[in-house]
Image (cartoon, rainbow, N blue to C red):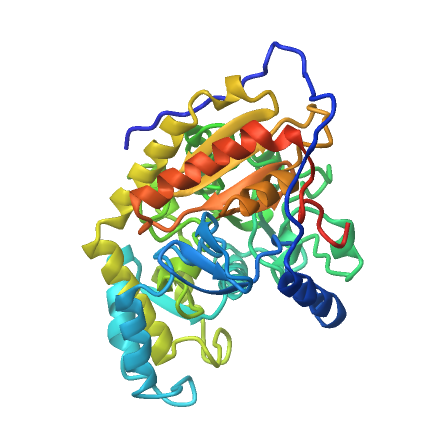
Length: 461
């Protein structure tokens, strides 16, 4: 796939801030304000999305409770990679729902063995296990790797390590949360496991994503105790796509060198959205992960399902009552996954993701030079990031304010610390895609003119 990448550059011009911003967005609607009040009163957890309460949608158009329409540039954190209400997915859901409500591990699901055969053959593995969420799949993969570490590699339980890498996301269950970046809020829950970590076991420094020297240093001393490394092969936050690919490849080669299982977490970025079906497909023909986890968009977001695939050396270690779930390999999960895979294949959506990337990078190729607050712009297929400069000290420019202003203009994205994250449905029409690009540009051009942006500060801040 041809890729034009906007490299990270530092503007040589001094920051010039507008003297007195005068614009303000309209206030949030009474309907939104009422729902926010109820949310504050009754709901805990979740994330910190923009104040757009969605009632429905079609394709890449979303409708909110106050009658507004938005172009969808977040696709429900990549889960909705086929857009809202794809007719073939709707058909799979409705026809299956009319056949059975649920069949699960209490009996045998008739479609499960044939589906399992198809998945193993498609991805080139011997065995499959089903889960519901990405967190469960990651937890299961790590659990299997630990058993392999004890029974095959011969690591004692008190010394065994499973490592992650900095900034990767694997979920918030207690069994997998410890492998992500150390966090004071996580510590408050007492969720800590120094054997399941992305921190050097002695130096206590994070094994930084993109810095292969960190992992080399760690494994040179501790490789004998490491059962597995789990990572998102294409994480998407480095300045260039090639940096992601080269880093993941080098980690995989270290695993080969030291007899360590390499686990590719494909939950967020897999299923075609990077321009190849699996992120690990970018690492070279000589690299095949020992275990993969895949979920979220594997059903087009139509039903929660996740899967763990691996070869006999690892997967045959799993016995009954060790890796199972009530809502795992249900008929609905199987039907939605089968339909989603068929849609991706028949509509050529992997190639479409690559084209979306090229369109975005072409449209934004001069943004680093044009907008003093942008550090770099990246795309991994249909997944985009606009990263803001940390040393651009204008309080009018934050990721939250940027995303909120874009929302008022009719585009939904997701603000994170210092960057605007976007995930695009691979089925998005070109007209909607281009209009989304235009709204991003308008937002970048105008953000410093706005003093008040409704929703520009999260209510918990």
